[in-house]
Amino acid sequence: MKNNADKVIEVLDMTKINIEEVNDKLNKGYTILMAFEKGENVTKSIQDGWSGYLNAKVELKEEKENCGICGCGKPANILVYVWR
Ligand SMILES: [Zn+2]
Image 1 (cartoon, protein in one colour):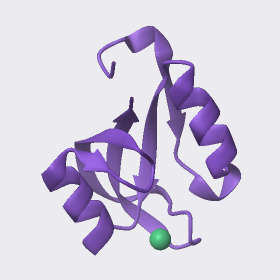
Image 2: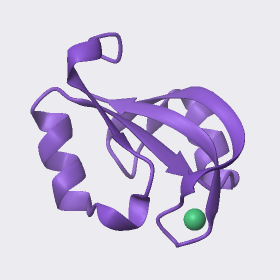
Image 3: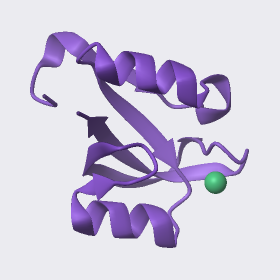
Image 4: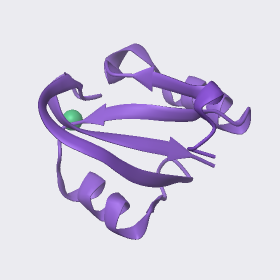
């Protein structure tokens, strides 16, 4: 769960992690703090509290300019917690 502070991994450069690694960490019970460029998909996942792509729960941490690098290489402006 996301409140298990011992098991939070920050991935602020999403180009440095692939979906297999994400899956592995989520399955091991880690919460991952991820950085994205805010767009339709991320916005919808936050509204739903769920990402079908990641097959995981999603919760907004904060919106902040240049808080990391999105998986597509663009500057990120939103941070979300992801966990299963
Ligand atoms: Zn992106």
